[in-house]
Image (tube, rainbow, N blue to C red):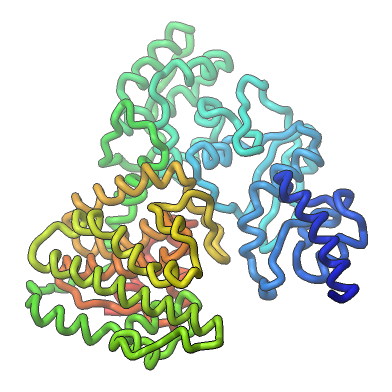
Amino acid sequence: MTNISIKLAHSLEQFKKLQDNGVIAVQSKMLARSDRERLSKHGFIKEVLRGWYIPSSPDDQQGDSTAWYTSFWDFCAAYLEQRLEQNWCLSPEQSIQIHIGDKTVPSQLLVRSPKGRNKPTGLLHNTSVFDIRAAMPSQTLLTTIDGLRVYNLAASLVHCTKNTFTQKPIQMRTLLAMVTDASEVLSVLLDGGHVASAGRLAGAFRNIGRDLIADNIIKSMDAGDFKVKEVDPFEDQTKITFGRREVSPHVNRLRLMWHSMRAEVIANFPKTVVGKANVQQYMAELEDTFVTDAYHSLSIEGYRVTHELIEHVRSGNWNPEQSDDSRKYVDAMAAKGYWDAFQQVKRAVEQVLNGENSGEVLEATHADWYLALFGPSVAAGIIKQSDLAGYRTGPVYIRKSKHTPPTTAAIREMMPALFDLLIAEKNPTVRVILGHFMFVYIHPYFDGNGRMGRFIMNLMMASGGYSWTIVPVERRDEYMQALESASVDKNIVPFTKFVASLL
């Protein structure tokens, strides 16, 4: 081992001690100068602000945002805690985002603090923190979630601006549906004499079908000698029925997104008349599609595969063990897994073409697709058997994306809800677009979500009589940007138009 390697190993040991203690935002004082400079030079840490760093990977390319987006919330929590000396909180509007489990990275994080500087602090990749100099709300109105000091649920609803209801209707309805009784909101309304907020919240609760809560707000404010005028702050009515005991923000957010986006999908997808497919002919064409589909789908995920390799996999005329190139071996295992999964998907497609409900078929078979997709890699020892044991058991991040996929607990609630939505959906183009998008939005597996999403898209294509559709690797950037727009901005139109352009 060279002298440089010995020194780098020592620096990495010091860094590992910090990481083992849960440190994400690394201050200069936490590491010796020599260790800090060495780790920075070799790409293991990246400077965010003067004296503040985050973990990074030596493999990151110039301008890669992944390390920053994955560290954003933990970094901001530690940075604000240290600089503002525990005397800060997020704005009510961004507190709402945290309460409903939406960890999308904002362009600007709004913070209140008596020590605020009333100006933005620039961070990486065009993000910033704007700390407003303002008195802190009472401690009874605050709580802490994942190290972030936020307004509690009721205070967030009371103190957010009226424009939030029209600008962020999915977030607001999701949070409103988490309230099961008027009392938690009333204590904040009455203590502060918030008449205008009371009127908005009464109208908002009535908008989502919680008439009892709305009535209790009006009656209780009136009993406190506050005259309230009820006003619906939303611009439209929701078609979703919120059960009184269904308080999962993850499920409600998914349902709200679905019903908000489906109208946009229908409006922007060509109204093509597709006849009932000839099953035998459809399946024959599907068989012919495999090589091209596998090449593009695997290439989108970064595998280096050729048409020849995929053809060898399909014919069985291959022996990957003969390769002394580990990268080629990994690529070959991915190609074999894709072939195995494709066979499972074909059977599902045939069931759908024969009249079975596509959502029910997907729910019953998607786990088999996933096992087949990674079976060869498990057999080769590339990944662990335990990684195939159902949905992921830890956090996962999407490269270069501001969208943070839901937690492990949320997945268990959201996947059944997704199947219910697909099963009930009558419009095949909505199933095509939202089936793919919602699956990758949830990101239920550690790996393979993109390939699974495209399989789902094509199963739903079959349910509408559309041919199997390939996403070309040459349009990968456009494809990923369209998914990012849907995930972060809740704008499904670019993805709808992108898929429509492939038909």
